[in-house]
Amino acid sequence: MYTKGLKCRECGMEYPKEPLYVCEYCFGPLEVDYDYDKIKKMLNKDIIISRSKNLWRYRELLPIDADPVVGLQSGFTPLVRAKNLEKKLGVKELYIKDDSVSHPTLSFKDRVVSVAISKAKEFGFDTVACASTGNLANSVSAQSAAARLKCFVFIPSDLESGKIVSSLVYGPKVVAVEGNYDDVNRLCSEIGNKYRWAFVNINIRPYYAEGSKTYIYEIVEQLGWRAPDNIVVPVAGGSLISKIWKGLNELHKLGFIQEVKTKIYAAQAKGCSPVVTAIKENNEIIKPVKPKTIAKSLAIGNPADGYYAFKSVSDSGGWGEDVSDEEIVEGIKLLAITEGIFTETAGGVTVAVTKKLIEQGKIPKDESLVISITGNGLKTQESIRTKLENVINIKANINSFEEVLAKKCLENN
Image 1 (cartoon, rainbow, N blue to C red):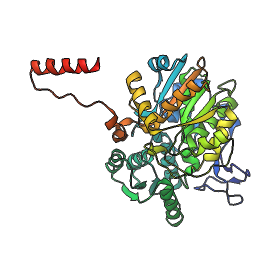
Image 2: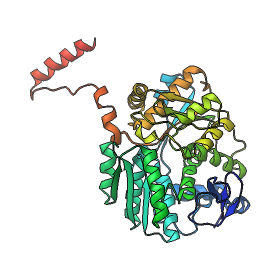
Image 3: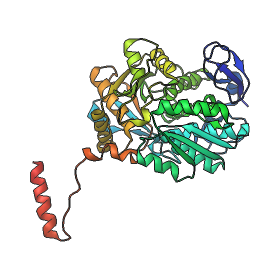
Image 4: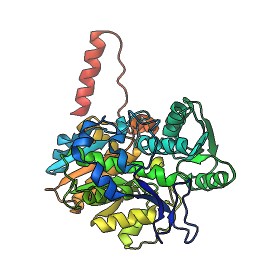
């Protein structure tokens, strides 16, 4: 209703609303082009506030024409004032945007998949598919089941078992591919060219990616229509961080915020940090790497939107940083013991990177700050289990309890 079609992000060539993703003239990526003048006449804060608390409250800024078929319980996740972590890190105003409790599959991917599945139904597809490092596979599996669509998900063969089970339970065809995510994605591109399937992050990608914007829309609304001074964002394929920047500029264009002053910080693992490396080198060329990190959900060595992630950070005046596997685990534990939030490894990356950026003086301590938590720790327990204290075993009597407890207390002193 409010989309004009697709437009190349490089040369500006315009295309109709079809399952396309690459410009046939310059091979640049396509993105959705909106009629912002029309949206501005129809949408205001009061209308948004009056709607159901899900991602579709921003429907005019999302690329569907028919009614959504999934995602009616997705989005509008908590924005938590993290006072304990705030004190620990020595900053004035800190929030956690917590998509680890997202419906239905406990990750940020529920947002983008809600849009992709709804658009796939509009296009008349009967089969959806994806290349995934885990969370996307979970969400595509769950939401295709709800939409009554056939489903294939393709994953690296070394994926965490929790994420595999969290896909299988919904009944899709789960295909484990020998290789890393980039190998999986190349295969899926070939399959997508041969079969009429809706690959959410390939031929449906321009529509799918727009769901990411709802993350920042919610943050701004939950802050009382105020954009944060700083936001730390995990980077895998680069879609989330670039769409956060797009979303902020849309809110400014529509008059919801007075100016775009938010600085965006990219967070990656040392074992897979092509975007952060480019930021540090001030080089817009993203050099592919072979991932080696426990943060498997961020293990994309050749990010599709890497250049746009770099540009979003640069244009915002932000920065990027990476952290070791050990620091990732410490980040997971820090968030858990301060705020009672159990995040997966990607969240450990953002927390650890935030800590490092504050210590470096890159993020001012007297400005507002949002940390992006995009997935639930229940999915990646094996990454942290050996780094936690052992269970205390006792016999079923008070003497055993007191004897062991006293011994434990002495050990800790």
